Image 1: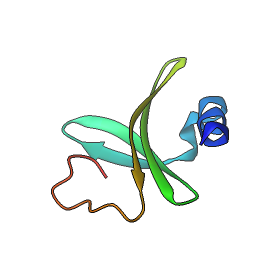
Image 2: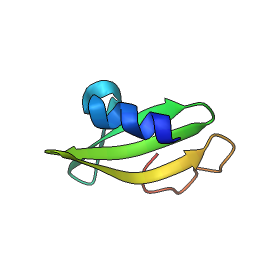
Image 3: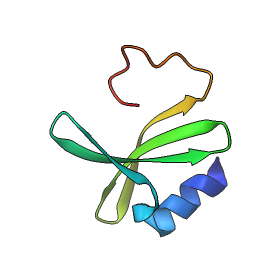
Length: 62
């Protein structure tokens, strides 16, 4: 996961766009995990990390 976070920090536009609640997020798959994040200037804010076997029904952001 550390490598994925570093990669996203270096190139935050890699993830696909995800709009939710009037906000723009991005999501990126790393192995069996989905990383939901926002790039706020120089800061990468990881909002959620979800394992691919997690139940996402009713989830706010996925």
